[in-house]
Amino acid sequence: MKLTVDFTSQGRMLEGTLFLPEDSSEIFAACLFEGSMTGATAQVTERLAREVSAEGFITLIMDHSYFSEDELAPQPWESPSKRLQDIRAALNFLENHASVDKDRIIGVGVSVGAEYLAQVCQEGCNLKGLVIVESAMDDSRNLAVDHLDIPTQVVDETHLDSAVDEIVLWARTLFNGGPSRESAIRPDWSVSDK
Image (cartoon, rainbow, N blue to C red; front, side, top):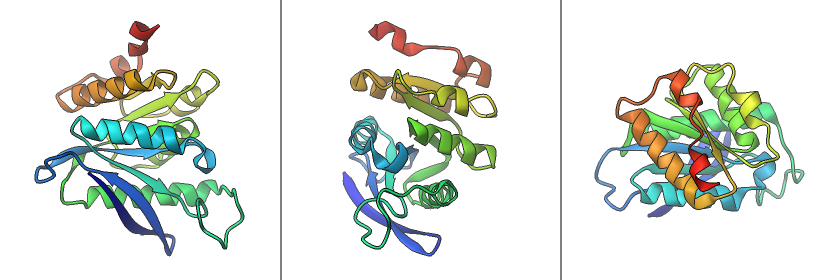
């Protein structure tokens, strides 16, 4: 089920897209998806969020301050500090959603979105893990992973169907007594697709 949701960040109303599994009467693990600069990978991010939700997770993607149809803002406009505040507001929204287990939330960052999620994690937040979805040209892994105290996994964006499978398998493993930080970083599960 796809819902449009609103929450406040920095005094501005932000819109998000929340994907709920079919039986939304249960409590679910959740994924906060963060896309690339100025939302350039919005279609990739939305597809991943929709398909991960179909596997039994609540997923949220958001339209940041000054993105999209905001007529009063310069387009495209990126403010790292404001974007970090927006991510915190989205995480707060997820943590307080009635169907979300606030102790089972991970971040899924596409491209530079992983770097923003990593920074939020370094500053302290409730994310239990971070999935970095990157293309061959990205360097997000090197910029995001080194200073985190939570499990991380790198997923290749090239094959979106296998990326969904990798995100779901990794999150389920993590939440079912999964790997330590060290073992979570090492596997490259995308090898089977090459």
